[in-house]
Length: 191
Image 1 (cartoon, one colour):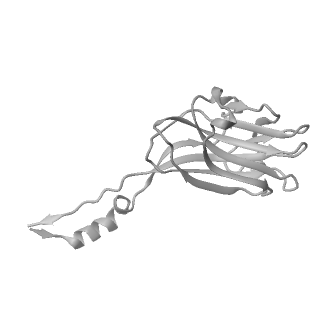
Image 2: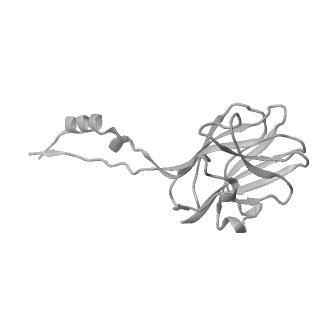
Image 3: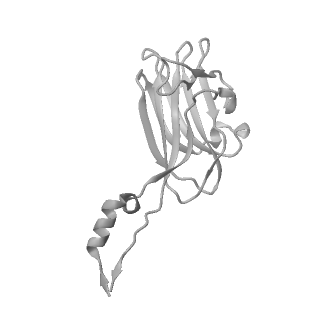
């Protein structure tokens, strides 16, 4: 029995995805219409409102989601619909982020929460994906980080924003969660 080493090389050139892996999208939200903030649960016990934003306050598509308040400090959370995730998988969460006005810094975070969005409290947002303070970027920045969950189940993406009174907008756009696709290797035998 002979092994065909050059066959594997030819196969890898023809079908590189099988050798080097790909990702599969588990969840995606563009926030484009007809999406509105009523589609996700909100938790704003200390002020703030969530709203859809149109141009020029978007990163892509025709809408984005934002947290704001003109009169009082903001401490707002918005919780996605349910997403089925498995333990033992390294997921990647990616999204676009910006602020409405660089003169008004925002503190923004993205978390993963297990449970029903209506039952959310800040203490239950146990997996931090990304968090940054004093953000002033008026142009969109892609934020991305990996995470795992402790057990299989239904989870949510949670956005959190805090800012002083009379600040402007913390904006998120186009969020996705991906996972790796298992690598498939084949060997050929020539007799």
